[in-house]
Image 1 (tube, rainbow, N blue to C red):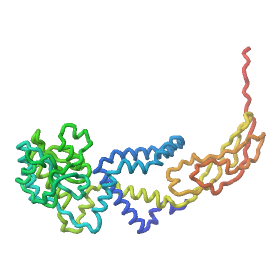
Image 2 (image 1 turned 180 degrees about the vertical axis):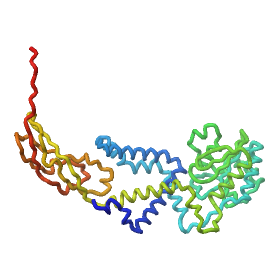
Image 3 (image 1 turned 45 degrees about the vertical axis):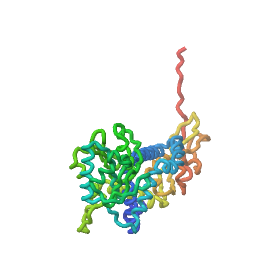
Image 4 (image 1 turned 120 degrees about the horizontal axis):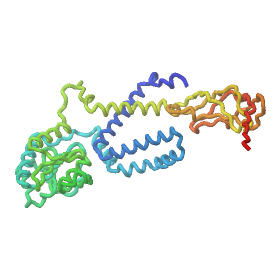
Length: 398
């Protein structure tokens, strides 16, 4: 193996650097996406199985490796079935992030103050309510029913919508672009029993939508007179109206931040830097595995000579030479974690006699993994000295 194969970074090109950078962006996007979905634990299980498969292959456990290979044969179908909802969301995000997309506006601080006052009044009067502030993700697919409204938000309007005598008080109100766009809408219910065990249907609906998109869902409990929020698949109760106002303002700043005046700001580099560092590391590792790792190289090994089928009355005295030189060809990644002990050479000495004798070696005497291709080996014969094995005397006690 030459030095370029051992040190591929010394010959890396500008195109390959761009390639690594783009893959790092994709990996970082996937990490952020997994954090926001319920798929994180499933992916963790898949990674554990992948690591176990690598260990099994390294230990050459053939039957266990065969079972793993049968599992990974249907892996793509399993991914589609398990992550069908998450994949649908991902393709929606691709459409939303298109180059022709215009900036999406949402509720301003004025509407946020109106929502805070209205929900505080409803909580004081023990009147249930459910308000959805849309983020950047499309939510129409997750919502059924509802009555179009398209009105400016106001405290009296919100109180009238959630009045117990109103026919639409059990549904959700959607807030987009400083306007109430729909009321009496139905949201998907959450299946997270751990978080919804002691709450009502409104809270379950709020959490169900928060699990599927980046919207902020605000709920008022008519039984306890409390206000809760659901976001990013998490449901929690708020302690005060001030906390509600802070949460709504933080949501707006996070989803729709003001433009930075300083174009050289390093805010994007500082934000979420552990995930970005992991993404770059994984991208470099994948490049090292698949780009230089796919290049065909030749590697030479010194293989010890062993014997088989030695008559019981003989023992080995010397083998000359004790090792042969074998050259194999394979992709570079095959040799990354390769164990040289998997290459064995055995000479058949069944016809050995006393004294020195030359034995021819062939490719059939050399055993090696099927991923390797034998190019040549030398010498093709060895001299093996044998001698009579010492006789074991049996004692006669009789």
